[in-house]
Length: 236
Image 1 (tube, one colour):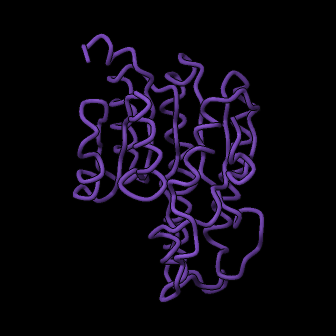
Image 2 (tube, helix red, strand yellow):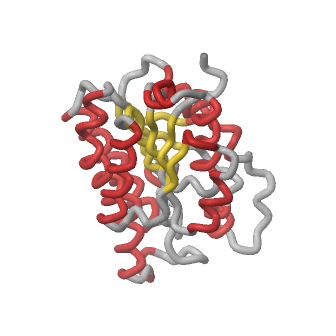
């Protein structure tokens, strides 16, 4: 691939791409020819995840809760040609086992809100000029805990509910963009296992199974809004 061909590829920023759904989606975008800027808190795991993706990926280790790191992601996306897709996938569950909200340590709750709400909004703010220039799309990964009051899921659920509402507001404020909150459903991931320590979650589907639903939001002419991956499965 020539340098010119590489520079003409669309650019995506995918957070939390060292494992789980973020890794699966980033892998699919690379296969499609996208240039992808990815991050992860564990540098070793991130290196392992991007091995084989070649020059179409830029990995930026770090924590999305860190404003300096978010600036590095935005700079990497600009250097790649400007983001037309932002996927806010990185999430913080909180303590495991999940505590009742009345018992939730407030410092841990502040970290959940920082990663799951403030970081996605902050990254959107930084990438907004790039997204506007490219008619961009934003995928904010949500959860059914944002709309259903499950015992023990108060911290994480409240954060995802706030992210859902922030997504809806950003969609109203920026009608020239597509802003989606998407619930991928229960998946067989490390984070989901932490929510159910000691339990067998092998009946949950693998993250790769919902990637086609997310790609449908990238491709299709759908209005901004909140979507369930299950409702998008099989869509063309």
